[in-house]
Amino acid sequence: MTQPTPATTAEAREAPIRVLLADDQALLRSAFRVLVDSEPDMEVVGEAADGTQAVELARATGADVVLMDIRMPGTDGLAATRMISADPELAAVRVVMLTTFEVDEYVVQSLRAGASGFLGKGAEPDELLNAIRIAAAGEALLSPAATKGLIATFLAQGGSPQEGPDGAEYAERLAALTGREREVLVQVAGGHPNDRIAERLEVSPLTVKTHVNRAMAKLGARDRAQLVVIAYESGLVRPRAD
Image (cartoon, rainbow, N blue to C red):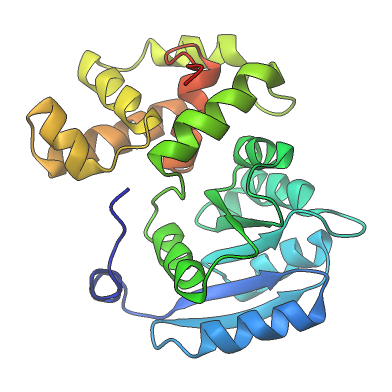
């Protein structure tokens, strides 16, 4: 997936990216804070030790991106992400789930709950910082490999979602898409960035972006990660064994 460069992100934003850290390990939060605050285009605006506090601080601080640990005592990251996604006042907040194991049964559940993607706790510092920038730019932290492998596999095995519209309801919403919007949705579900989709469909990247935005509006998706989930759960795209 083509990733936004720091320069591109800085040009698109007038203010630093506001980052909220949610993890029950104080030492890890401190390490993340030092890393994030060292960047000129982002700042830590709060720290939460559990999911309930994370939701409260997301409201209070106006955070753009929440780095959310999946496993926390009390209200875990998964439940907190659902709460953030369900709150219209927090519609602009992007959640990046942090997990010890990137191939984790909770990963797809977090995407269903409204997360923009996931990142392993063992990621390199540059990966973490880039993940924040990608999420803030409205992109999904899903590479083609992750989409075709982990996402497809777990959606195929996990049945219908416990929260939100089920596959049948998504299928009904798909009827509102134009033929081109459906084509673009299939490409998004494959983990392809706009530039690559534009090449495949022989249109401009701006046209692709327009179709993506319209598909998100019609399907009620927060971002590209949600489009991937909808594409699979509606049956528009079928998981492949490879």
